[in-house]
Image 1 (cartoon, helix red, strand yellow):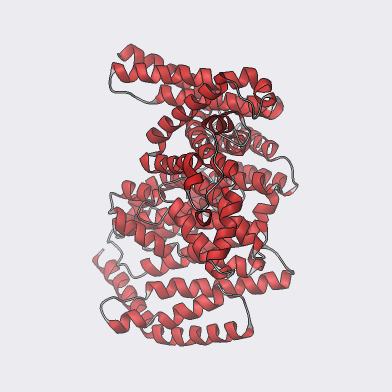
Image 2: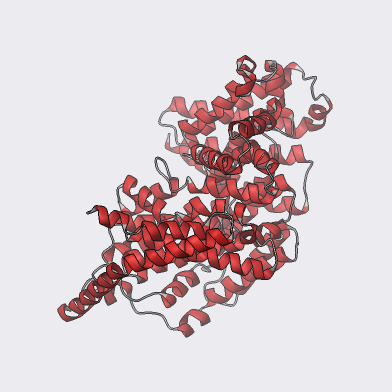
Length: 634
């Protein structure tokens, strides 16, 4: 059994390296779309069935069969892609049989990799395709399709499992996964923690703010919420706990900060790659639109974190815990600083110049590797191999996700649900854009439960963005709305995958972590509505209008962040005291701007500040006394 496992492991590593190399070579030597997608799926799904560790010989035998079936199903497309396209709508028995097996293999991989809840979502869409003709029209009933039609559409059509989702993962996601690993193995990410400690390394607020800044910078170059949690959280969460933060608060801060990785340019999250494919726009347009909301998110989060941690009494050995603050010279002259600036600068410049997204990622890798050649920590062949191996492992998970996504988007496109549901939703909302946005937001949250952001975004984008645009919202704004809404599910209970990962590292209670993260990350729940009503936040309008609207919205968001921190559940007065500030902040931040809204919002803002100022001063005096006491005891 050990020898079998050793062979399986060796083959898995080989396939993972091959998967990463194929993604790179495909930039210069692309195959026919159906061919390259099928080959990518073959290598990725094959590696998945090899990588899983069955507990018995029967399990090994079953996975060996799964591997052989994977080669047969997707190898058939690689070889006979032209025949499959020629007989669209007129399949032979082989096509139907292989399509059925392909759906089975993807469902098995989905259950193992993504869990039964997501597999249940996939199953619902498949059942709708098979039996939706029995539903009434007002619930989205369709005309009905034969089994042959369903399986061949999913298998051999470019709108099925080999559709735009796996195409985006091959052409875009894979390269940015490799870029993230290059940054990791080149030591470039060391600059991030050093820079964050340079900015914030004082008092009990230091480590939490270091967490926010480091997660933001890591997210800027890897675009992964989970990746940011595991890279930054391993360092910042223990440090926050040492200076006196509860495990749940430390985990919530890390989860919320890491969750912003997918909205902060230049890389952003993998869902953005689906967005540019569906909207057929340049990556630069998305970056420009996402800049203000991303900065607003981290600014508000930083103030909320500072407000919640400034009252904590400092431990006697605070200086020993946080360590000496690095000097500006140490941070700036460190080799990783040049590598980070050069890589991020190259990537941003090429994207702004509207170069190919693939070529931009490749050049960013080249620049990163070239810069490290002049430092002691050189990028060696061994590091290159590890980069390809680890990137390939991450891509295997992406392949499973995108194939499962094909079993959801395929039925949507085949049955026309993507055009029927919008009409139904507009009817349900009675043509009211606010009600429709609220319904769409909750739909995103529900679908995002236990599901990767990219999957939740694609499903909701196909189903819900059309009715939003039909009520006058521009396409990019509608897609950004559902993207933010899907992302909010990553920190919101009952699942909240990012919050769960951070709670695991902190050994904290998940539920408390999730709710704290939801409060800290409240911008994600409000900003989507704000930039629908205020397009200036997405860089639409004159420079003066953009600056004015951004300033008003920022003031409102900061007011709400501070108001949430002032809630005192010990008395009714303590609960009601922050309400005016919260209401004023909401009016300044979210609804369509008008003189009435600004006047009422500003008035409530002033009243709210007057009400909480005494408690604010009391908290400040208490914090200062604790600092003095801490110094005396030390």
